[in-house]
Length: 264
Image (cartoon, rainbow, N blue to C red; front, side, top):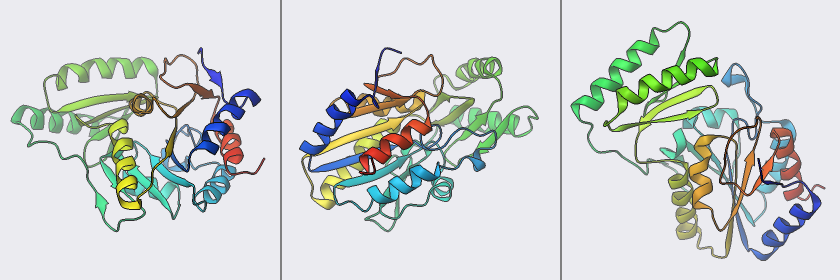
């Protein structure tokens, strides 16, 4: 991947200059593969302890505003990582909890589903609930299929594309996972929504946005941050990304967050 390794001193100095020039930093973080190493059982994939230490320091800073942006449903994301002055965006931003509001926000409501979409969704969901080789995770807005091999994932993805073509649902494919969800919303739109809410409700300007993510679903967020700092956590080679910098794994994320928190 022809990107810059952000932990090189030269690159750290460059982003530090941008951070120093900005009055407010909006730090957006994916969860799985970014803050937490991948686990066979997703509910055992907790953020690295050193990452939690840095995040708790950062959210106490008057300069930083933290937001977790994940494909996990909101309730599960909050159980995985406990922060007090941070925003949570679950289900790729379909459900958002802002630390300065008491209610959960659903910024995107799809139009009433047509009959083809509803039947295709329900029939497919019922099929994979019965599957012994694929684990279905019901997210309410949609569902995720956890798949244990790349070849099986490609085969299932090909079939699902045919099923959901011309429906109100879209497919999102990540590492060993395929999600079926309402079309028209993604992590990029969620990042812009949270940004505007922070600006409007907290009355701040002169912001710098930073996004750290590891998956194809994070590319939508990278695309809306052309004027920010975009960091891709590689984990494994092979993905073309819009990001400007890269980290190798969540261990590297821990080092960067420690730097941002002023611990180095």
